[in-house]
Amino acid sequence: MATESGRTFPRMTGLRTGYDPEQVDSFFKRAKESFDRDQPQPGDLDARAVRTVGFDLVRGGYHVAVVDAALDRLEDTFAKKARDRMISRVGKDAWMQELSRAAASLRGRLTRPEGERFKRAGRREYGYDIVQVDELCNRINRYFTAGEAMSVDEVRRVIFKSRRGRRGYDEDQVDAFLDRVVDVMSSVD
Image (cartoon, rainbow, N blue to C red; front, side):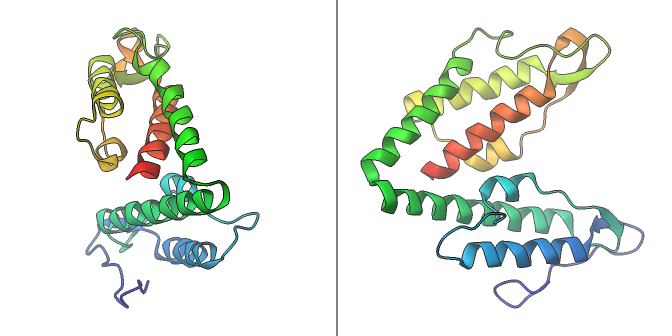
C-alpha cells in the first residue's frame, strides 16, 4: 500500500504471516476518505475504529509491527481532528469540561482498592493478572491526578500475563476500560 510518502508496507518473507494486504489497503483507503471530509458522515471511521480494527493473517502479508505503528499514528491523527472539531464547535472551555467529565468517569474505577477494580474471571476462564492490571491502573491514576509522565502507547501496547479463574480480572471489562483511557489520553496529547 502506498503511504502518504509513497512507500509501501514491507511484507513478511518466507513462510511468515502478516496482515492481509487487501484488507489493510482497503482500510487505509477508507480511513483517508473519512479523514479528508470536512464534516463526518455516517459510516466514517474514527479513532476508535482505527484502534479496534483487525486484519487476517496471511503468508507474505504486510509486516505486523509496521502496520500497527502506522495505525497508532493514524489513531492519534483522528483523535486530534475530533478534538479540534469539537473545540471549534463548542469552544475550548466546553471541550475541557467534557474531557474532565470523561477522566472523572475513569477515576471511580482507578480509586477502587487493588484486587477489586474489575470483576474476576470465571472459574474455568482465563483473565488478566490482577497485580499487573492494578499496577497499570495505579500509573494511569497518577497520570491523571499527579501529572506523571505516561504515553498513550504504553496503554495501547500493554500485555498482561494470563491467570486462570479468580486470580485474573475479566479481560473484556479491562479491555473496555483501557479503550476509554486511550480515548481520553489521545484527546489530551
